Image 1 (cartoon, one colour):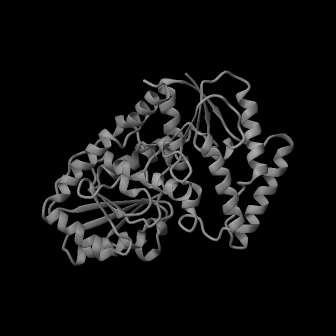
Image 2 (image 1 turned 180 degrees about the vertical axis):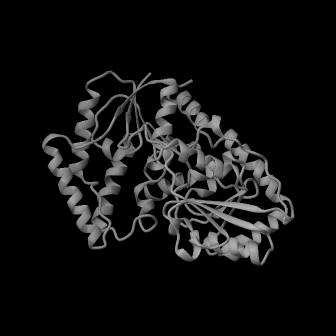
Image 3 (image 1 turned 90 degrees about the horizontal axis):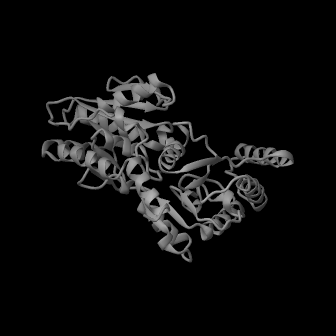
Length: 376
């Protein structure tokens, strides 16, 4: 089967969008002939693209979140894609976004993978957006979703959000299929961990936007585990740089930002997970968190907040726990200590690896998508 892969990100880059465009492209290639089409402004329409960037930049300076999701831009992008599609024969379209497909005309099936719908991000990921911009985006997204053959969703949360915001859509076209870890299976060196209060505990925290990902909660949890629960604990941080009070703490090992496109840094990423015992992910805004899949690949128990699609990846009493958003660092520390004491933590380690092997990896994703697309 020949598939037109519509993606505005470079599918050869392992970093963009947590590696999702790269991983999906690789899986589609395993079973199909794939042609990448990158939506873009061409010719005279470049001027419109420049104007949109200026408007968005001005809005940012004024404290507003703006975007280019309007009818004119949608028609420009759809026109470009339509022209590219006319250059070759294809059997299906696979896209990572709805916006560029709004005005594309085709009699071929269209498959989509999204980790959220636009209204779900308002006042969750996106703040201070004028109502008119919200309405434009929502109407265009709904128009695109109505023509999609099937939507692969990585969490139950998205399906519930669709029911809430787009009740007239056919819910049968939304198929829950968990995301995979953005790591090479052949390089994973994992171990089933053993835990006791007498053993050192290495916690890993990952996130570029450390504030949103909950670095403050993660750090205080680490301090409490050391000073109140007498568990020698180190917080290993991959990603953005925290405040100096955290950065220079004796309980913290700051590794920094790692680029998975650079082999040496990719190896550091692997080794840090391999040498960790637990993944702490106290984010309060998350569509689902691919890093949860990476933690599962290394058999790490996961403790997080119950927000967005996280609960599809951190399953209570199987591979860890999600806490209510009103819980604090003391709640995390107490729960972690209790799970070590009563033996649950080792069970969570085994549960994480089991979930990775059966759900949270791209090979499983690719096989299921291929079977659906080719109706096997």
